[in-house]
Image (cartoon, rainbow, N blue to C red; front, top):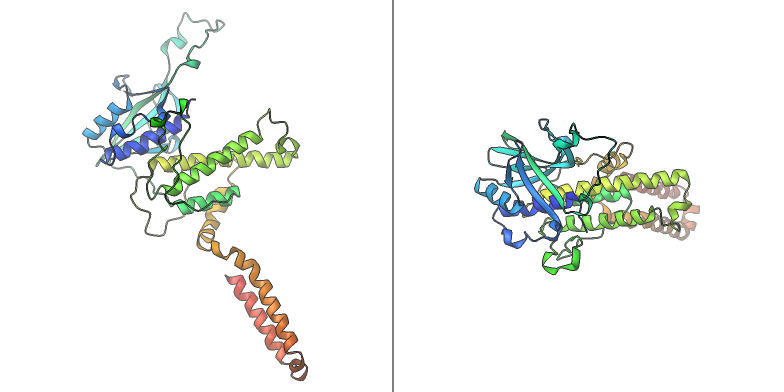
Length: 356
């Protein structure tokens, strides 16, 4: 089973950062199953092969003073045009104390693809479909100064996703259940968490597992061969809404993967976080969660325990008021102005509840 390139990038960046920070050894994770059937190469733009394996690449980076790695959407990191065609949507930044390098994952354009002796009418079979994947990282830039990497408030992010996709986020278990990807052959020594498990990343593992399950459900529901799915019976409007939700789901999953790759803190944020800013832009026409979730997530995180209380409280208050009126019926008949006081208390209660 081949894995998505972004999954390999998450493992490379997250575990690589721990290695650069002397928190883990290469021997502890270099046989990670996510790298099965894949070769990673690292080249300069002059086509010089710098390293033919990520272990050698990381070893040299560490000796050179690199402090961490980070993963970013390619569209948000400016790089000079290169002679390679883009093969991926993300770039890896290598951080040093006073500079940073940008590594672009791309596929080299074969020079013979436009050879004078090549005829467009003559089709050549492609034998690479059953071969192993080849991820080539090109050092596209070496720039002075540092590059900022945003920290993640995981409860805030989970609340925003739950609000946008209308799903329930269970509480984090202790110890957390790590998120792992399927390993070919079920080899035990290669079944490592996709990214390191820490106190901070516990909710990240849970969140990614939930989104992975949601994507599997969506794929099954909309699969062309699943003729008994509810999707086949939907109206055009409902089907379009489901597909839009699927696009938002995919976007949120990429958002979480990027943040999982960049998470390295030993403890959670101590101060209140700033409003959520998306790393991965929602697909055009599916920005429902970008504005709505950010506007309402603060209230959802701060007052989740009031959900049932808000439903029961008016019923109880009305019942108490009715009992009070019955009990004081004779007194009210004798002193009618008391009914005004009772009504005033009810109006004040409704106003107070509305302001909560």
